[in-house]
Structures are given as C-alpha cells and as structure tokens.
Image (cartoon, rainbow, N blue to C red):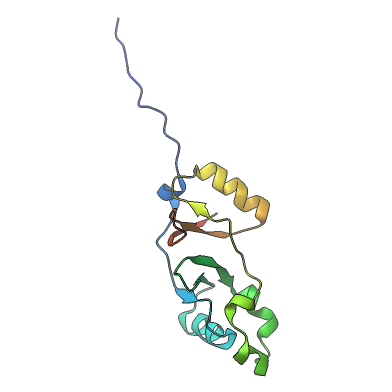
Length: 126
C-alpha cells in the first residue's frame, strides 16, 4: 500500500495578489495639482496619504470629474475635502476571496492594501 501526501491546501491572501503601491500624493495637495499629476502621468488613480503618511484613500479621475471646469475653487480645495474611496482598506493577510467579495459589494475596482499601522503597502485589483 502506498500513501501519497497531498500538499496542504493554501488559501491565497491579498498579499499574494497585490501589486506595489503606485503614485501617491498628500491629502493637502490642491485639486488642480492632483488633476495635473493624473494628466501628466496617464494614471487613472492616485493613492492619498494623510499628514502621518497613512492611507487616506484612493482618488480616481471620476472623483475629480466635478472639478474639470478648473475654477478658482480647484485652486483652493485640498484633496482631503474631496469625496473619495476611504477606509476600511484591505490588509495583506486577508483572504483574497474575502477581499474580492468586499470589493464587489462596495463597487470597487481597486482597493488600497495597508499594513497594520495604516501605511500603504500595495494595491489590489479585481
């Protein structure tokens, strides 16, 4: 009789599926500057950090659409005053299936991944 050992079942985690953090900006940057960064980089989103360097959210072109007219208001509005995708965020040890379900329920295409101190370590996409 031969006994075969199967490899232990492992569940993929967010850490296995995430990519490195991309462009990041501070939440005190003005809207017009953020729009210029998105435009010049060709990116669709920016990770936003608060004054302590922790993740404050994910800013997309859609969030900036109301500001496209570029009035005096965009020059005086910090990103922290724009409605954007905020916490809770994914963590690297979260099961990937659970994270995907949370993203679908929140209507997110991308989700910041943070360490246990709240600093961005990656980005998860569906």
